[in-house]
Image (tube, rainbow, N blue to C red; front, side, top):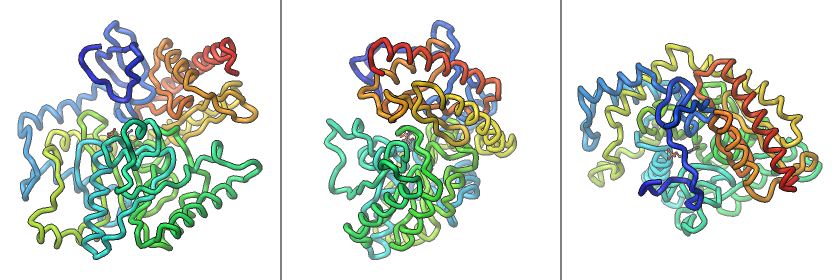
Length: 448
Ligand code: PMP
């Protein structure tokens, strides 16, 4: 186990799996066992492992300029090139972008830029943020407050009240609908709840609404049609910004360039990105905001002497070079188009599990999906612990496939964007075996 404090780990669980190398869509442990990486690491290794071009981009940049910071006007060409290439891809108007190292810090940076901006335009009281139940936005102190999952709060004394995070419904029809409620009625009810929350708190105190267009860590929630259009209308009415957390859904994952496109959010005001931005070959994140928000921040930064926010590694040249090469490969090889085609196939194949006796819901879009296992298929009753999910993950592993259980007993799938149909077939075959074995297990244990 070594002296590591493992991240996001049950410290009492003693099983470990030592990974040694990766190639394409596969990883190998230290005993030489091969696994299909069906979650692309943590939803991030879009171009798979051992990509020679990304390795060379990193090595060349290390040889040329391994580090240079970006404080006080220092810059470097590769960082500027990345900013320009990235912002040209974004639906954010006249986007400007701030670089960091992780999805969590991108979200922290966004909170700070929101505050800076609203102070700059004379609206210091407009700092609260609406986040949703069961959302995942990271684990640094501020990002963890945005996150709506209890494991990220309990024992940490979070969320902080002073941060002004407000909570609204998760748009999960399967879990959230009232008996007899149609999808449309469900959407109308939760959007009305959102509006009532805004009225109760006062629109003049609320800066933004943050959402993952399609969630990841909270179980791959795909909202019903029309949800975001209705949310957007409410936000427009009360002058509240739409902040898209695209840390998972960005860069071809959901069958389009960004998750916003897939779910019909036309013009997000802010976008957070990480993970697939560099295909996870180097840590890098991006917090994009509308150009006019940046313009408003110029005067105050001069008044203070500096915009007092920046990381040593903001715009790290090696991470920038790798991200730039990643974006070039996406474009040159039409990776998003490929992901859209394979994604359709993946969704079709995953849908076959709708009839499985253990499966309550199959959901997803493009190349991200989840299979939720339930105690009662008819009523949708959930298991009251995560044993089924843990068993199924281990069963997948035994069959040579890596996945994760999210939201308890949903198995998540998010393979590298480069996989082919045969590898999706392999994923489905292994999932089928794991589900059958898990059904035997829960039956044996009297859990079903
Ligand atoms: N936002 C979303 C939507 C995420 O899925 C994640 C990570 N899974 C984060 C933020 C946090 O990113 P990181 O782990 O790089 O801090």
